[in-house]
Length: 336
Ligand SMILES: Nc1ncnc2c1ncn2[C@@H]1O[C@H](COP(=O)(O)OP(=O)(O)OP(=O)(O)O)[C@@H](O)[C@H]1O
Ligand SMILES: [Mg+2]
Image (tube, rainbow, N blue to C red; front, side):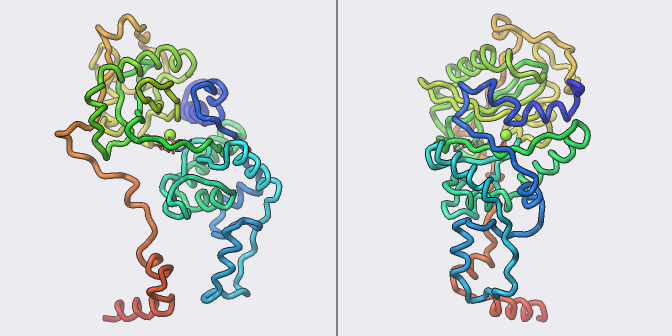
């Protein structure tokens, strides 16, 4: 396969491509290949959980509005379920899940914990089936596979970690140079970031020079880290430097024109046009810009806040209304 182009970039950012190379820096993970039958279940519109998932049993205990004759056939994935259970156990009983590129961040509202923390295969299926980020990953997978040969669909299970949002940073690399760093959670003000900005930036620059740049093949990308002062830096993810990646407090246009030591407006490319700076040159020519929320910044809205359970469903589930009441009310409203 050509070592340039969007497909090559997608493949390099897929979790399985880089995990082994950065294993020492990443939280323990287990990568399970998704077999064809599970993949077609994920791609299908049917919203039913596979057999032997604990939530399926609970659902059957709510028979009031449930007609047994209309029951959809539950798919069965005993081997895959077993693999998931083993992986969850091996990672301490609680995991964070994602596919090749994305986590189901938009679906956390659907789990009993209202988070992405999964302790059993049912949580995993529920999240994967409910997330549009996961559908997008499946579409990308299809596109990339069509042109680059089969790319395995990977379910990544990561040991669940309680992460303080004020310790997460997204770093932007253009033409192999670190040009920007931003706090990852841009909806909050963390005083200590401003107080320690110089040490934080220095640690990130050194980490990039020593651990990321020598081992990651792309010229333009993002990487996400967790940095708590005095602790080892953890690598969370790599991302493409394109419009699908949230540039946070930077803008896509701004990043495109950033090149080390120059403000020339040149588009991003995967070709080696510029020689990257070494550590000694950084202070003079291309110190990355560090953006964070300070006490004077207007906090942007949380992009994920608009994902949630619809109010109608909330009312229905809380027993305030039943479906018949709800439909009648809707008909009445519409005929007024
Ligand atoms: N092992 C983990 N345990 C708990 N939370 C995690 C774990 N890994 C990641 N997270 C949280 O989930 C968030 C999203 O994770 P990740 O970056 O892997 O998803 P993503 O879909 O690639 O996100 P994005 O689209 O922003 O790149 C992280 O910012 C972090 O807060
Ligand atoms: Mg990511």
